[in-house]
Length: 224
Image (cartoon, rainbow, N blue to C red; front, side, top):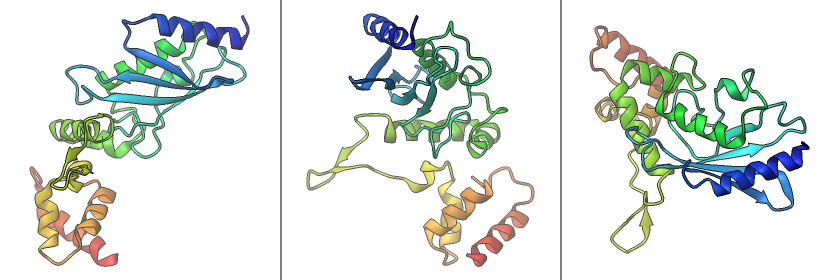
């Protein structure tokens, strides 16, 4: 079967399948090699109620080589880059087989949201957050889902215009208290958050060497 026929067949099968919760669309009717995939976040996870988009590029060698996929919806997950959307999943690399399809691969991505692999991360900082403070990770992941993957993520302000309610600390899983502490010392809020992100520090809770960590943060802030 030619690549074109294979892709057309997969598209039609996905359109007819109303149960999988996965959707495939061509970016252009004249180009079968560039698609967008859609799926909903798994129930019972921080991604629940989110609608996630994935860009799909089909190589010339498909189905003998895997499609190139990346998230275009920003997502907070150990195996997905929070900056580029790049995905760490073995079936998109060395474990690909022609038996797999675009639909089954999107379903695998959906399962990845349900079962992260923090010990084989794409985003090391998010993985560190997951391993050190899972509840804090889940709060941040749910916040990102509401902010970036939910059509109802905007609220109305007083004059009726759409406004997204942002919490800059929650966006990166950082305890607001730690940022406020350095704000009270005279350091700008955005600068404090940037240093804390770079150092991978989310909170002072459960730290045995709090004073030492505070001094290291101060040293970094004073360098800026």
